[in-house]
Image (cartoon, one colour):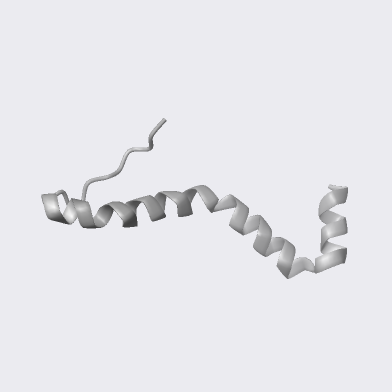
Length: 56
């Protein structure tokens, strides 16, 4: 908790909130990037609208 408070003092509340939100949505952004990269291949094969399952 002290780390967050010192960050708020050093860089400000909006910056800390931005970093926190970016950290939380990082995995969703990775999935979105993967989907966009696979889109041209899916369009060539006609596999549109399928859900990409997470690789374990």
